[in-house]
Amino acid sequence: MSRTAAVLRLALGAAVRALWLTRVRYRWLDPGQRIVAERDLWAFEGRRLREASARQGGMLIKLGQFLSTRADVLPEEFTREVGQLQDVVPPVDWVQVDAVLRAAYGPRYVPDVFQSVEETAAAAASLAQVHHARLADGRAVAVKVLRPGIERSVRIDLDAVRIAVSWMVRLTSWGKRFDLLAIWRELRDTTEQELDIYGEADRSRRFAENFKDDPMVGAPQVMHDLTRPGVLVMELVRGIKPDQLEALDAAGIDRQALAKRLIESYMKQWLVDGFFHADPHPGNIFIKPDGAIIYVDFGMMGEMRPQDQTALRELVQGVIEHDLDRAAQGLVDLGFVRPAADLVKLRRALGFLLDRLLGTTFFRASGPEVEAFVREIRDFLYEQPFQIPARYTFLGRALGILSGIVAPLAPGENFVRMLMDGARRYASDATGGTGPRQLLRGVLRRLQEPLQQALRLLAKLDRDDYRIPIDFEPLSREMKAGRSALRALTWVTLGGFAALTAALVGVAMVAVRDVLIVLSVIFFVGAILAQRRA
Image 1 (cartoon, rainbow, N blue to C red):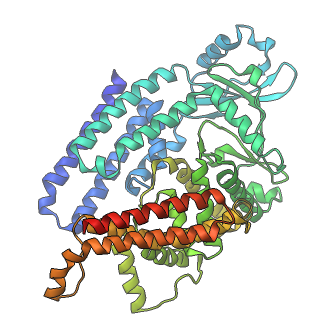
Image 2 (cartoon, rainbow, N blue to C red; image 1 turned 180 degrees about the vertical axis):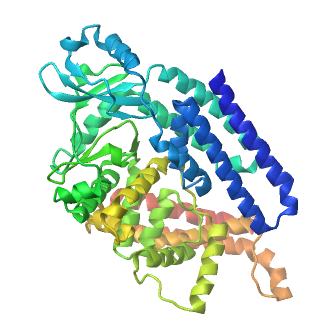
């Protein structure tokens, strides 16, 4: 009960202070002072959560660590405070670990299963800790043990956090603005995944299988026959962590090549496997003397849908080939932009941003023209806001951590350009070629914009809000009478596009041709009906 009370006190205090700030203090503050006051409050709440988590331990530490990685949706002042929890996880006493091992293997687990088990933890996290050991046959292994009673405390804490989040959503605008319920669901899912020891063993095996043909990337072997509920036994991996720069230099490891290899390994995970390590912090990566990368800890893994992989490859290939049509469509297909967004403005905004990120020549302008275009981008983003679907949370998390690892390994290098260089091989392998399917995709991509423009026009007509900015009263009176005819013309145009597409690709894909012919018939029938209504 004390754990639940601690969480609810945190939430209630935060809600009260947020209400006081937004409903009372705002009246006496100008916009600049409001921003400062909000930042101070976020820092204060982050400090309260950090201190409470350090006292309570367990799931609350996990909560703080998790929130510290969500800089994409939470203010920096908050994430900076709770980020200090990353190193505040003391291990549980050996007596408790010994009890878990006895329950798993019997009272004589030493020497029946292990020759020895080190009592001092080699690593400790919020949900589990690792002890080095040696099997009866002499092999060195790492034994991951869930903290005793962690499943129960996780359930209690998750329920308390859910109640607290519900309060925040109801009582403050912050809860809605930062979608705290979605963040809670993500925390719940990731925590349940990390508590699933057998699932982690299977994920480790799957990851190793994906890289079986690459001697420079791998994972430790899992002893499935020795894995028990709450206990995972795996090959002991030793090496240098990627943030130990002096040790890497002393071992003669090329840091630039290592950074490239890390990025390429993730490009394969994202673009080819669709299954990736979502928590690649330095403690989960070991570098062997030959520069090989060994990933450990597969408690948090992400998986991409095939259609999302295809869209991501389209986006990457569009950037690589300077094809803004393709890149913009990739963003739409990924769900970062609403399908009805203005693709012309989207391409221009994307070109401008890529020019700034990569130093390319997507966008050529200077002086007042740049200022005007920046205003155009601002208005576009306001009207057609970018969004990050929840299913990409793990991908964004891994990308953010990866950038933090790569920066000191390859100082002065452009991280986005390194990503594109690392993606070339996998993007082209997956989407290259000039066969019928590629031709069809190109044709449909070119036709998509005019089709979308026509559909937007139909939507405006049906809403009765079509306007033309010409101040001619006679023309204004004729607009309503001509609306049905214009609708019919639009249907005919759509039908023509569909028929043209069918003719172009008919020889390549008969099934698609038939579908498009049917669509064209539907469009022409629509035109006839529209004419009759007129």
